[in-house]
Length: 153
Image (spheres, rainbow, N blue to C red):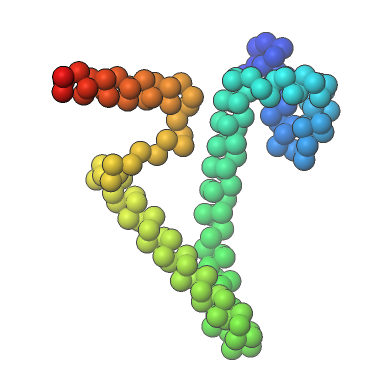
């Protein structure tokens, strides 16, 4: 994130602080700004947009890391499930987890397949849309509704 203005640099430092600190007060301190300034910055649309993007990127990195280590995790579960020295309750729990993972993988495969075919069952995933895109989508939906009403009349 390249920051040119003072406010952009403050937003960037506050976002970094919020990822590293448990409270807004401590994030403000880490960013080198007052709590009042942090509170004001946090209420701006620019901050909300940049913070949401930073969280999405962070979540994406976490998902990638968990996918990377998932083979090892499944191996641990398999060893626990098949080891006769492991208590029965733990073996049962491992088997349940493996079954749950398999079900989720199957569901995700089905979602991916529908996505590749261009099917979405009439549903749209809006979680990755920006505020501007959401506003535009709302305006288009309203215009379509008005057009339908006009065509019926």
